[in-house]
Amino acid sequence: MDFSTDVRWAFRRGETDAVVRMSEAEIERAQAAGDPAGEVEARYSLARVAIRGGDLPGGEARAREALEVALRSGERSLEERPRHVLAGVARMSGDLARARDLYRESIALNEALDQPMTVNSEYHNLAFCELGMGNLDVARQLFAEGRERVFRNDWADFVPYVCVADAVLASVEGDHSRAARMVGVTDAAFASLGQVPDPDDAADLAKTRAAAIEALGPAAFGEEYARGQAIDPRAAFTEDRR
Image (cartoon, rainbow, N blue to C red; front, side, top):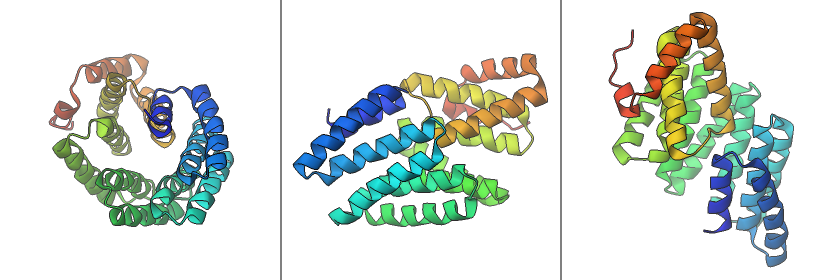
């Protein structure tokens, strides 16, 4: 596997120290070789690590460094990951209006690059912005459309994220029993892939978990959570909401 594949899988497995080591070495190699793609990927990876550790300003700084390299290269495809991170930082910082604009710009870029999976991913993030801004109907529709694309195209790596979305949506709707079940479905879905959620989704999932425990109590939460862990993700979306 190449650096990009290796470092992304290490990040998904939660191997933060390995990501940092690999990325710092890759920056040196890429700069010496005049390889902007390698440098952008490495700086993007360091940005994600910073964000996962709660350092949003550091994550933004690393992403801007990556974007500067991408812009100097003239290769539009290299702009995609840094722009994604900058939108994510805005969202996690609470600047949802700016995040929404940045996600829309990212969607347009990825449509131009003919990258449907990434377009879908950014619509997922856009839906969270809409949800946070109180546009529940818009968010619900975007989540449903994204879920349909994921299952229709068998995008296995994205299945846990549609589960995150449903858990958060259920929480906002006040259905904490379903939220607890969907947290269980989500955790099992990530575990089946040997992955952990991206930082922004992890933060949303943690809030949903805490809200469900507070609303239901630890025992009832545990029961619903255990039910969710035994449900196949596709089957979870055929359940009647109650």
